[in-house]
Length: 135
Ligand code: ZN
Image (cartoon, rainbow, N blue to C red; front, side):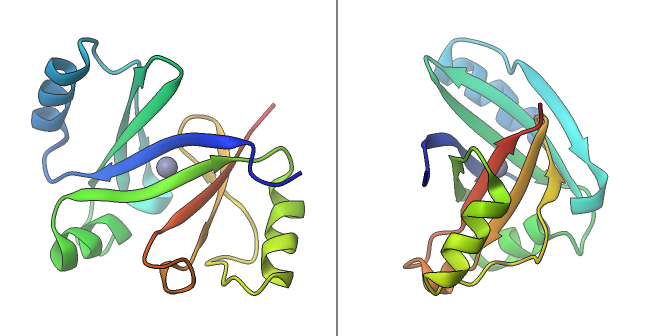
């Protein structure tokens, strides 16, 4: 089955309101959704550009993964998310192919998705997210 398409690109930002204003100016439309994922310490907003999506991520606590990312690397592209039909099957396939997956089980992410991440050390520096729409 594999990765069906790029579902969205995630961008880490320090100030979600300011970034929302800027991306609205850039893309010509406001975000269609804003959502906090308390378990991940993140607040997100989602924009559409034609068939594609951009996710902005702001940390809500100092120990959230986004806060640590911003501290180390500053603002910028944080991850690329791929749409998958069966996230558990894909996690198994990728594990067998030698990738390091950051969690044993998929987690509940923003935008009604189950998500899992691959360690960027095994993907040439890119944090890869798998996401499956929750039906
Ligand atoms: Zn994402």
